[in-house]
Image 1 (tube, helix red, strand yellow):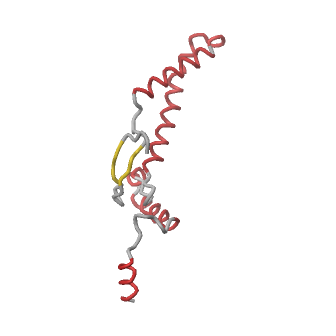
Image 2: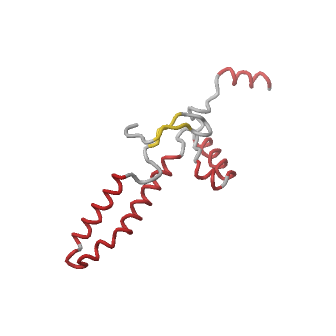
Image 3: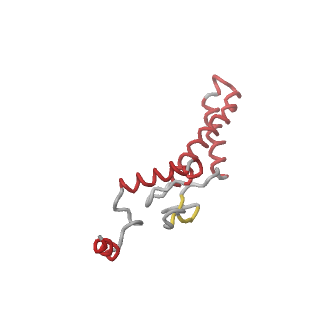
Length: 125
């Protein structure tokens, strides 16, 4: 993955992960917010004069909410479906979502059984 900010492991399946988005806004994001606010203020200057600069909190809020949603989307493990944000909120719901993910993706590379495990189970039944 290009431009990963964090290298980590999934808490459930222990697969290596690279997160693209960070939890907080970086200094380059803040510069982008200020430039965008100045651009909007310049475009609206004939109608709002300098009051257009007061749009900074609005632009900042929109930018931060989009960034947080991308970060939360990036946190979910693509191999097992584990989402640490759901785990912090409700453990039972997080477990249910992982089970649903595994039912929808039975050929997940993390939980594939080996041939010896399959043959051992068949012989025990």
